[in-house]
Length: 218
Image (cartoon, rainbow, N blue to C red):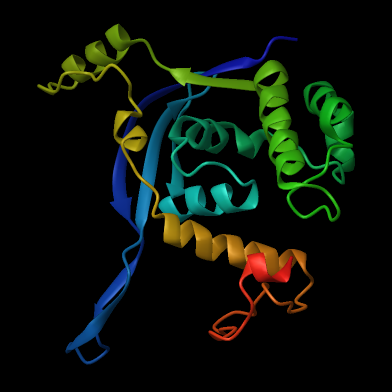
């Protein structure tokens, strides 16, 4: 059975909920929230329109969980478009669905981001294999034809010119390497079952300047 074809028509940058004033209406001086939030406008195989929302921080976490290059925006976006369709091996009903079962038969035994005793490269390749299986069996998300997107803009009276890539703004984003590194530290702490070592630190703590440098530990 061929994968369904879903199309992307546009994307837009917004922000999460935020509080800029106190409960009494005064300025708090410390804005909270307002995190970048991407909207992806899609049409599924049945012609239904929908809006997917991807927090910008999701890209940081994905890079940390699977040791992906933060500069590899194309791979991060590809994962964002298809990761939601990965079935869980623990979902008994998924095994009854022929499409989901085909994905699980290919990838059900692969390690996930929390599997102990495997390398970062193994976790990364396993997740990319799941994404590839989703695209073969379930859903392939691609850009809608430019002519169709331009015709839609003209239909609603917009003077916009349809971009070559509807996800162009997302592909221009850059991840902060320090934020990715901090999330990698959190992932390492979680994988270590909350047990501190000479390099693994609990949240909001510091090991101190007197610890040995990695080359001195060899």
